[in-house]
Structures are given as C-alpha cells and as structure tokens.
Image 1 (cartoon, helix red, strand yellow):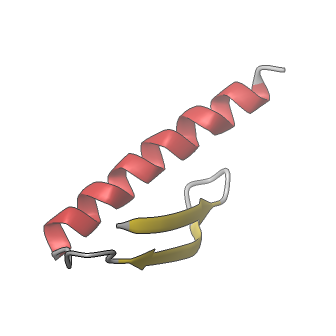
Image 2: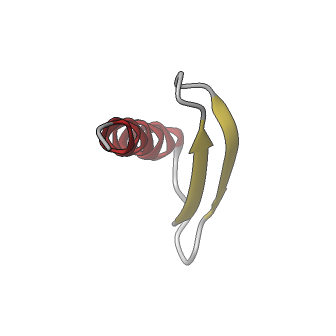
Image 3: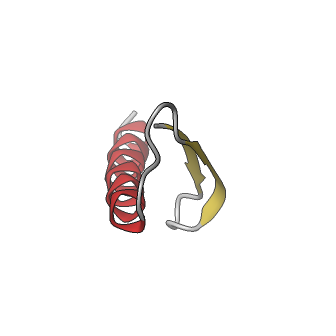
Length: 51
C-alpha cells in the first residue's frame, strides 16, 4: 500500500491518498493506516513545536 496523509495541527484531514500496490486492502486495514498516520503526524507536530 502506498498512502499519503496530510492533516492540520488540529487533527483535521487535508488530503488522504492511497493505492493498493499488489494486494487490495480492506476497511479494517484502511482504518489502521489512518490511525497510524494520525499518531505519526501528531508526534511530528509536537516535535516541531519544541524548537
């Protein structure tokens, strides 16, 4: 899967783009990927604010 997720600092989605590369994915996997993206973006945003 190739997925791009862009969010605001308040946790709202700006862009979600994904494509299955080889094997299709289901809704459960999509939700898991979005949760992982949200956690990663949140951590990155927090670290950027520390500077």
